[in-house]
Length: 79
Image (cartoon, rainbow, N blue to C red; front, side, top):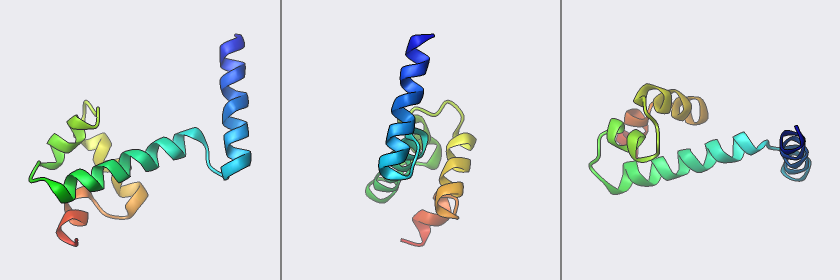
């Protein structure tokens, strides 16, 4: 009830202030953390996905590709 209403109000406020939803901010932070891990380690894409809390690496890869236009592996190779 009330907690859902407060959460929605906070998301509306965040969107009004930044033009992005809480989900957008979270996804941006995940992709930036993934980029740092992909650049600084030899970890596989699956290992990076698991380290970032994804149970299924394909969900991570889909999110990464939607946000960057490239798969995590492609992005790493082009750096």
